[in-house]
Image (cartoon, rainbow, N blue to C red; front, side, top):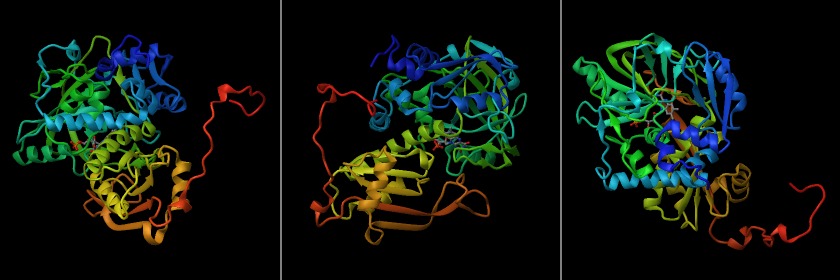
Length: 466
Ligand SMILES: Cc1cc2nc3c(=O)[nH]c(=O)nc-3n(C[C@H](O)[C@H](O)[C@H](O)COP(=O)(O)O)c2cc1C
């Protein structure tokens, strides 16, 4: 693969280098005319989705450009990693394993000065080109920023992505789903009656982004990013908060979560393709904003960008969990039809009789949002929905291969999940399908084969050739 003069580590840890790489690789679309950040930007991004990453150079009301679509296409993500797209989850899984094995192996520097604080700006969110995406969104949203927070008990750091709605010049309301570390920390701070300091890092690069999207890893999971790029990612000290930020961020918004306060947040066009509703949710007060000299604001469009982010990280997490106990597991894919959240296809090589059902149960335990898990043999292309459907049609028998798990924990953004009265959790019936060849008569399941032929060895012309 051509690296266009920019190393993998740089393009994964520095959004500016990443944009340069995409430009040189011919994968950057530039929108040069002025666009309205309210609805128009997302309308253009939606139409261009999957054709390239889109840099909006002139956004009305702000001096700064906006990047969208970075994660819309897995092949582009693969190119940034210098890997085939299908290998990216394994790279993430390896980075998690390396970090778990040696948690202090790659220790970042804590800098006073870094690209992220080249400019100390006024704490005014309205100066930023924060878009309003879907037509019924409740306001402008930061939807591609990492929230760095300190565990109030251990002092360790956590990073996670949260949708944050701009409600004033220096105020945000935001969503915390059940089970998030940030929710635990806010609760501890609220019990102590104190605010929780955070630093919100926008455009911290893909290595930090993927580390942030990995759920439930615990203190200092940002070190996974170091193992992804093979060197520590520097951090920079906050101006007003005792929480560092990624030194390469495009923008850093320092803020505190106000204790005991809830304000309206939502609706927001969500990963499911539906709106997440409006409710009283957590509030942040902005204390400072810093940025690079020429920053680019990073945003994602709900849909493929989020499916790929969640998909690639969940595939890594599920693969790691399963592989340790079932060496026959060869790959995991969370297809777009399952929103990158709810459906997993797991590929196995020569499983022992009955292993399929056990693998299904363990996959549900490894990633709790899953609602449907399908296990297929290694001759099935898990990235091809037709092939997976074919395996279900020809190798799955509901009498013996179906697992129905009622009353399981569901992901509350999915409208088919029954939400509990407190609104904080929900349940759903999950299904598993073992679509591997049943034991007993393998000859009946032999797939038709043809001789591999190199067409370049033949003189072929006429219609039907691509
Ligand atoms: C684009 C995107 C948006 C997300 N938005 C939210 C959100 O608004 N609220 C939330 O609780 N989790 C959200 N998540 C999921 C968490 O950021 C993610 O699961 C993270 O790993 C949680 O970290 P934790 O397990 O350490 O708490 C989002 C993830 C992505 C990729």
